[in-house]
Image 1: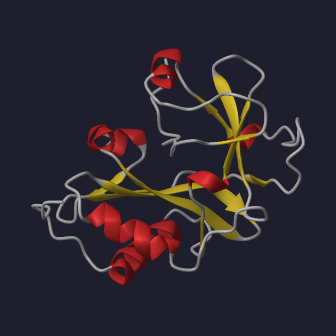
Image 2: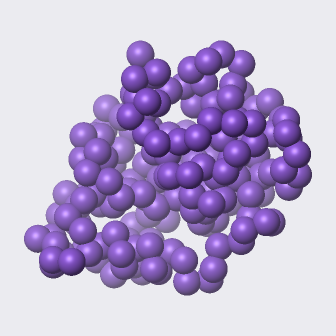
Length: 179
């Protein structure tokens, strides 16, 4: 893989900036990191909405998962995004994303840009996200704060499998544009 044109900060420096961003947004500054295998999507009440939950009981992330993801993402020229999904147990549930599509997201979409690092932060708003501990169909309770509206065209552009209580097969950005 070729060396990216941008120099990223160390993970510790990026995490420090992320925690400051979370504090300024008045949400918990202690992150709980989840990855694609930890996400659970359920269809919402209308065909264009989904409930997002997470689980760490069945596939807990390895202790070095964030280090590895950041290192791999830093080897690309794509924007790296520290993204907060919601609050669970006094922690901010966060996911690290990396995709050229994220270059199009800016302050109007709730992103705080650090163009010198080619990193963005998306602290989101206050709201809870449910931790799923039972993977039987219909397991995620209704939680209006965790429903993300996704337009049909944006949904089709992302390779996700739609079924009740399924684990995400790719990292959804949860920042897809709505109609």
